[in-house]
Length: 562
Image (cartoon, rainbow, N blue to C red; front, side, top):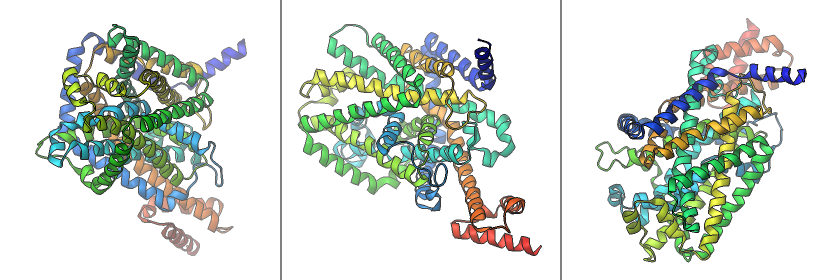
């Protein structure tokens, strides 16, 4: 008994109560405001979002394009050869298990929801009319907003966090620690604390947004199946509680439970896609429209990535592109940490390119099949979904109407509900795990937080979504939560990227020094040379391994002569 008490006391001392309690208190206050003052809260959100989108929207666009280009440079440069772990270490998970966990950790349930309806949101937009037709551009924008740039945010940071955890073996699993190569001693001061607090706030905002946006689809499916007259809000709350129970149980089981749930919902997900493709009656249309959309996207990628609509003719970038970049940025607190932790044994190149293959590939397949199925119903005159949406003003009811056109629709709706619950549970497993890690002052690589800490965060993560559901926030207001939270996180992402670049260059120099230095350049002497090179700033000017080798050789020569 005394031993158990002593161990508990030791665990308590490991907790960083500042990082834990401040976000918790803020979460409780925000939840209370949304619950007690829903109209005022939503109005303030809208005003802040309008200001940020109007005045600073170009920063989101520039960061998105920059991160994507940086990801390609990391993958195809010499840096891409570095292993996230010991030299020669093999991956811990199979490609399928790794890819499943990665995909399901990154907005998977939302991908399922938006795949079915996003083209509807674009179809009547003035910007689409300027470009051409909904047939050509609605499906293209879905691939743009859920493709290369969003996953670039994840994968660059995943590589940075994986390098930090598995190569540098740092025990503080936080955003601030990834900034140490640039911040230095300030990482342990107020700057580091501020970065970590911003990260936790962003994590909570992303959680609230994704839960609140897509969960009503499940409640609408339940209403359709049962014919119940219960209001959608009450059913949504019950589903949120059920999902919380599932992901709490899973996260308590650790990585084994998360891996099993990820593989299960991946099979369910692809089962739905295959069923819709084969039995939806739109197979040819789905494939041809998807193929055309990919070509149109690749042809216009740079134009779409830099379009800021300076004269605000339509406000399309502000309403959609900026929102989506912000949406993915707030999820960058949890998902990349999780992806980085499960990528041990893989090279940086494998992590980035494999992430694009599985993450972007799975996402695009979802939008091509599910999105083009419902778009095909509209374009082929089988179901006027746009008219129904204008009348009902409900995306959720419109989706159910589209799915009702499939054979054995009730069975499909049941599978859809189970898949979304599994997706949510898997996504929030990773979030609860990362949030729990944030609560610790230090946590060695491979060690998991205590179940009590994971259970606390699993409970807290559900509070703000419940408050937003109670406040009956519109989709625009839910989007505002992400856009606001992502504004400071964007600067932190930039800081982490630059820190990663600097840290990798220093690591490469250390490797070259250890391989080529022999006895003459070993020990304190070699370490001193490397320190002097780093202080000089010359390392950052090198663009290849050869240049770094030459730089080290010149310093060694000069050192020896001195």
